[in-house]
Image (tube, rainbow, N blue to C red):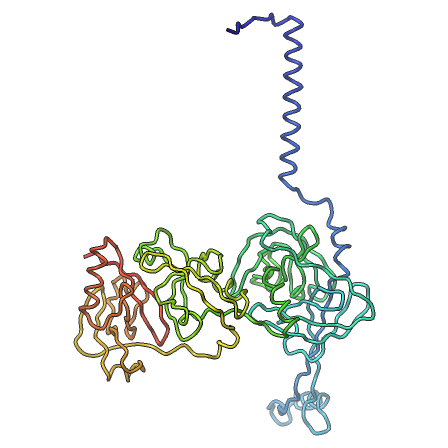
Length: 492
């Protein structure tokens, strides 16, 4: 048994212990401070080395567009007015010998960056759209004409090509998925025509969507202005993690909310444009929507995630056995969080590839193999026009006045002959159905993932949901051919 021995405070042994304890505390504090400093990753002392490293690969872009001749006549002014001579002189200075206003050249400015030593350049589609001539100015002071290789309006990306006698300096794409909120970034470009200007800031947010189905924007507070479009957003390793594309501003100038298309999107688009001159995106062939909390409850799902299939026209998914009402929870081994994530993941997949798609159906998972089509080929193929609106024996339930489809209604509503469903005649404005967007003219074609042709069918589905302890019943509703799922409460 260890016995405690008291040591007098003023003894040499006690002072030795105190000194050793003090040294240990100082060492621990120094180590903690060193660790905290390393974790904080403070601002670099200067961005000069980074700017010097990447500047030769960043370019200014000047485009020229020939504006067609105008046949407009001189503005109407009173005869003898002092403005008559002024307008006549003004119009005549811009006219060609035929009397038409002469074509004029319109210039625009933007930015870009070189991604290969043989002269491929990335920029925004809106920078070069409609241009007749494209001139590239390099940091070293020389200029070269560029030709257009290909464009992708969906991501606002374009690829240009210049021919040079010597290898060009270029930059590499980085992994945008590793960028974190708070990371330092540097933007470079041609803001307001000033040329080869840099600005620095941080990653403000990730995964921003503006308008497109393939949007994956990095938000940054690095100053981005008109003319920065198409320029690179660098991480501190000198790799491009975004292409500066848009700003949010009430006055047209930078207010610290800029958007750069993520490099992991851009690099795939660039590869396809260089190889094929066009994009080749995968196509699953379904219509989808997000899973809301009430839809999740109606399907017995623990969380509102995945992509709910609202329609399956002729195409890859129908051939593979996917059905309306299925929830896609995994695609090609990747978890599907929501509808937007699925669109991006499918678009990045290889055309013609057979992929595993895991769906949730009737409370169980099912794996199906789908051979992807090509989206660009399918975009001009219309989805079948389905169901719609009102006549005959009206029934009121769930805040809806309903009537079965008949031949007269099908013709009136341009519903395919033989289609079954309940047309919505009226909606109680105080009901949950009205709040969730149901309106006269909608057609209910399924309830609880079973077809409905009559009010009795709908009642049975509602009772089945109640008996199963569900709070909602899932309806598949079509409006002007567009399907969507709506979950309505079944409480009596």
